[in-house]
Structures are given as structure tokens and as C-alpha cells.
Image (cartoon, rainbow, N blue to C red; front, side):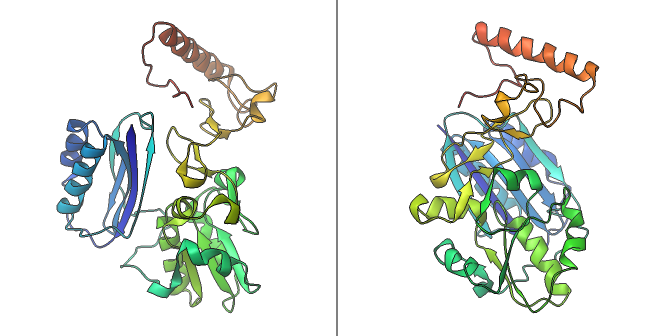
Length: 302
């Protein structure tokens, strides 16, 4: 059994470039995979491995950056390793928006716990905003949520500038870090009543029972699990190996779907050369399965 931990910490980090290789080497030595982003304004990551080794890596990160506790974290488990390799990336921002963070901006009472979230988003004067990408929104979202329909987080300021400052704004994202950036921006623009789902969608799905939930669909995650349901159980979506978009059973019924090669999202966008290359890769995956060997691009069986 593999354990997956997502986490972030907003804090000033000095000399953030020097530890990149040391951290990656430590991950590899513990057979832990996933992605850690290090920036001057904090860290953001999701890593997976055997529980004892995962905990060693988490403690290593905390010690390296003098972190007593993360701002938010979520823990789930899976029968397969959901990442191909360990990555440690250096970025200017923990989430790209073109705005530097200087600590957390929201007050404690503006972080809404899952137990209070339903009450918050049912209020008539609340604008509920899903700050994730459009394809994530299509996989699942909260009832009544608005998606700004922008493909890049850097484009969000254009949408936010259209909002009225006298409205209450409730935001949510997968784990919370994108909301930290968005709320920071709105605070600087003079907005006061800004609320965010504490711990993000994953915390909500893990906490709230399905029969009392206002969540519709599944939650996309950026690893080979693809999507998660309530209690963070494995979802029903797969990933197209041609364009890396999440695809449902309905997409697979399309004439434009060819396993490991194309889906309705990318069939008309890919060149013949790309389709041929992906087709060759799929043949290699099938051959590896027959020999009971792993292929780096082989999709784990759900």
C-alpha cells in the first residue's frame, strides 16, 4: 500500500535553490516519488511512498526549511505508486500568478472548515468560485460554483477585477494553495470578505459523508490516480496518453478514442506523426503487459 501526502507552507524561504538536489536524492533513496515545488514564498508538494519512508521525507522537508507544521496537508492511500519519478522544482512563485506572497493574508475565521462549508455556500450573498482549471471543473465541482474558464492561473486577475467588492467571495481548489494566492491578490485590491475552504476539496471529500455533501462528481488530481471520490477513494476517470486530459467512460465510447493514443479532446489536434508515435508507445505497453513487465507509461489498473 502506498501513502500519498499533499502539503504546502507559505513562508519566506532564503537560499531556496541550494537544497534542490539534496532533497531529490533523499526522495530517491527512500523510493518516494512525486513533486515538490520550492519558491521564495514557500513550498507546495504531493509525494507518495511506503508510509515509513514517506514520513521520513516529510520530516526531512520540515527540518530542511524549519517548518513546525504545514498550513494544510492531506493524506490518502492507494494500491499503486501514482507517480513515475521524484521531481524537485525551483519556481519564482509557489503557484504562478505574477504576485509575490508575503505570508498568509486571510484571518483564521476566513478559513472555513468542511463542517461549516455547506452553510457558507448556501448563503444568498456569496459568490462561489472554483479557482481550478476548466477541465478540473468539468470532472467535478460544488453545486452552484462558478468557474472563470481561464486555462492559466496567471489569467485570474482579469476575472477578479470584474468582481464587486461588496460581495462575499468563497473560493476553493484542490488542496488550498491556489486559494492562498487568489485571496492574497483580492486583499491587495481592497476586497474584505474573502473565504476559502480550509484544506481544499480533498479535505472536504475526506471529512463530509456523501449523503450530506454538496460536491457533484469527482476531484481531479495531478497524478496517475486521475480522480478521487468521497473518502478519497479512487475515482472512475482515466488519463488520455495523447493529451493528458481526464477521460470518462463516456469519452471512451467516442469514435475519436483510441486507447493510449487519442481521445475526443486531442484527436483533431494531434498530427499523424504524433499519433503514429503514440501508437508505437501503446504497442510497447501491450507487449510489456504480456511479458508481465512494467512500462514507464503503463497506466496502473484501477
